[in-house]
Length: 112
Image 1 (spheres, rainbow, N blue to C red):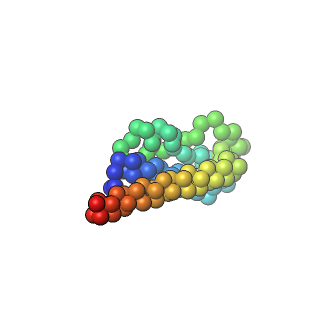
Image 2: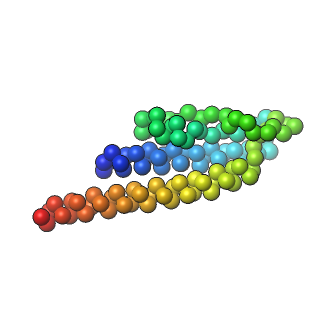
Image 3: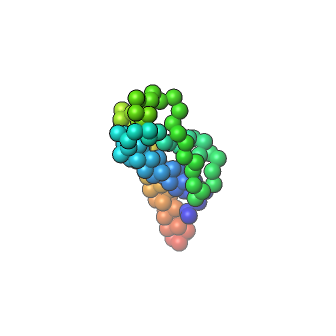
């Protein structure tokens, strides 16, 4: 892509998208007996994985389990949706800034 910084932002956005899909699946299965909340260790995945590699999905530990064996907390999942939206917004703005800087550098290079 544009440069190493933009590549890291792109990787970050990929992780945000994966977490969003997991959160949606958790919400969709909130009433499924035996369903266990799934997530990813965001910081670990961002730091350790090569961009483009599939992140490791984990069962979310330490959540209370209901009588039917389900441990989805709609409150937690709502918070995850809000956190993901914020993460996406910040990363998208950073990527836009990187593109703007690259365009500016290219423009100055042609005119200089």
